[in-house]
Length: 104
Image 1 (cartoon, helix red, strand yellow):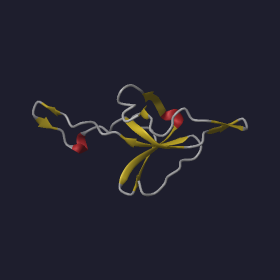
Image 2 (cartoon, rainbow, N blue to C red):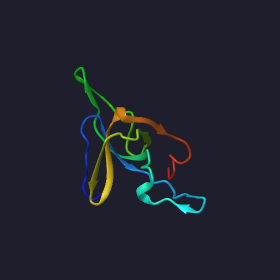
Image 3 (spheres, rainbow, N blue to C red):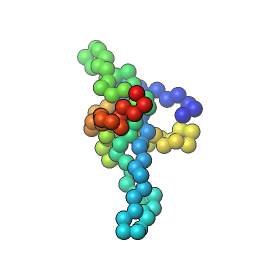
Image 4 (cartoon, rainbow, N blue to C red):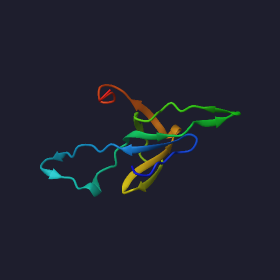
């Protein structure tokens, strides 16, 4: 990502994680018929939600692998890359385990 995008307040920028292409019964499903993945990696996070005179920090941070709702957020395109901006409350959970800690 050549441009630096910093989301405001309780918003988070997510890069969708593409699932491996599956072939069922010898039929290849085209990209246009596939559902968009509901899993992604946080690439930028805002400072937090401002409530009652204080900033409440976000529970997610850059690098977290998260699940989000099917119709959550706003899709944007920056430098040819499709990203998703969501509010923290639209994130359903943080995925942990062996895949999450790769390279650390």
